[in-house]
Image (tube, rainbow, N blue to C red; front, side, top):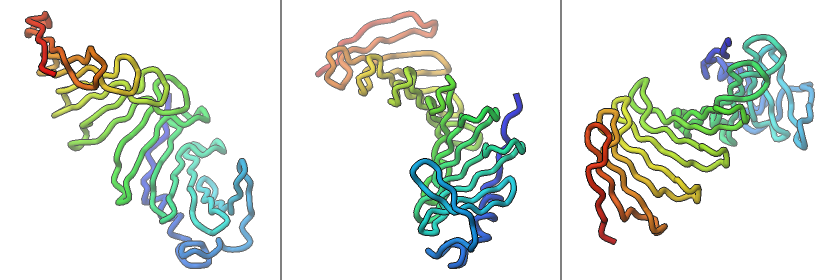
Length: 219
């Protein structure tokens, strides 16, 4: 299945940058007249149409988002959202061109990628988030296993390998299992069996994954 190509933010920035003076909304003015106004839901936008690139400005002249149609099917499959200061905050991507977003890229105020969300079950909302670490390798992965919008499992990685896992096994919004991994194997696990938010039992495993011992932890 062909995936939507990554479009450099610079390319989208050039479209936004074409409207940096007051007449284009860059300094708080209105977009250049006579831009058409379109209604989407209960909001209205001024539309700057550049073919496959479309820029939407709110009624105050601020850039709201830019949509890019990479495969020419008439639907934006790469959508860049801007905050009130004109900074990129979120990029949404329809990777398989089915009309639904399946990748979400979140950026901080400096334009640095914070995390990437993906939809594994076709729910049109993210249920796994990957946080970048060393180049090409994640440092942290969060999972929403039941699709309720809450993180149920967190994996901490070092040099591409899982070293720690935190699990909310009863889905109450609190971690109750803490696992330590070495060389791709589970070595120990601490459990909160009392529901007090801290571990009170520890299970230690040998190199083959068999239980060595169970320890009671001090309160």
